[in-house]
Amino acid sequence: MDRQCARARDRIAGFVDPAISFGHPEIELAFTTMFGTFGKAFFAAYEALSPLEPGFHDVRRDLYNLYPALVHVRLFGAGYLSGIEATVARLGF
Image 1 (cartoon, rainbow, N blue to C red):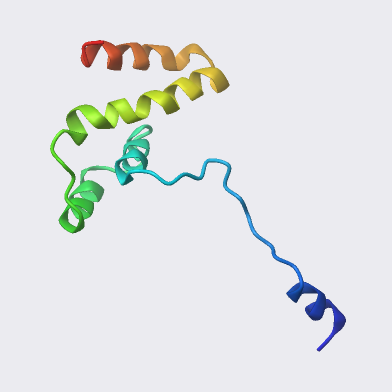
Image 2: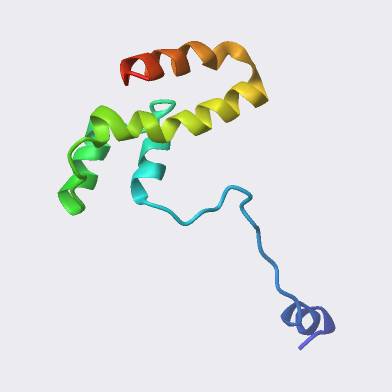
């Protein structure tokens, strides 16, 4: 075995995702809807395997997306404010 391979075995290489979290699956599912990443077919297939509790598409999805939307305001500007205001008004806050 050459020296390079031997040295590589002494190292651990990896990538750390700065946004990694352990939370309810609905949080990640909600985030996929923020920019229309997946459509109805995706959610139909997902729910065939793991049904979502009632209220996800009507309320919780938008609640979960409020924080990422606020982060986008901070990072990318006020263009996201109208969506936040509409969500907050629609939810009655």
